[in-house]
Image 1 (cartoon, rainbow, N blue to C red):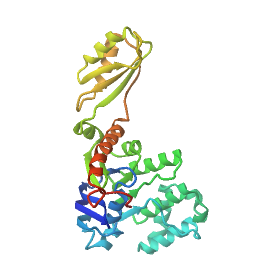
Image 2 (cartoon, rainbow, N blue to C red):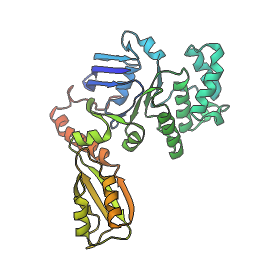
Image 3 (cartoon, helix red, strand yellow):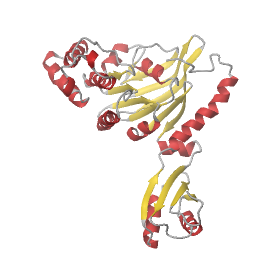
Image 4 (tube, rainbow, N blue to C red):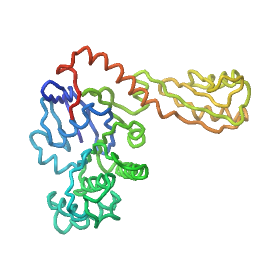
Length: 332
């Protein structure tokens, strides 16, 4: 549904996108992950026809982005990070105006506007002027605009920017509810947010696609370790004995008590590549009569992995001397 091959974009001496290649299959929700200035927005603007590429190829919904730009735009719902809206129109007036620009048939416009407002949770402000809305509500109006024409592809650039925690949950639930119905490329620099919405992530840094896969696959492929936290109540015995029992579980490489005392109620487990020892740990605890209070995968593994990738790339970028081969510095 989205195909990118050897895409490059230069701004004077700055390379914002550097030989990017990736695919997004129909019905997938893919997180596009990277820090500010990594090249996410530039790539998205190329895919949506707002910027030309310096070289490479891209297609969306079977149409070449560079040769069939209008066909691409008809099939894409685009939410930019900073949503351009008409401040002097009411929300439903603005969406009605946008429905005409999108050439939605007159008999369908009212239904499409109502459906988009409901999905984006802006029905309660439908009569308010756009200029009087908070940033969070303006972001949701932009999301309603992206949904208006019922496009098969959604490209969302930081869709939860400026939202409060409840609004973030609502938008994430909306995106998850579109799984299988639409193809979604979801850009963010907030790793836990991407992990909660997307089964697959692309990591971009300094304009280069560094990794592509599920969070667990990336941790395994790039040398990270998945960790699990186990807590008992009360501590079932000496820490050394508990550690030895936990390390006997298939897939567990190491078990470390969280406190230095001779008895410990909580341990951090490091698992081998591809292993998920939680069921085996649960069965061990049940067999030994240990009261298990918590058994959870630590959610920080992908964040730690990304930080390591970024730190490893920094010396290489410095060695390039900041010329065209040092992408991403301050580019959109």
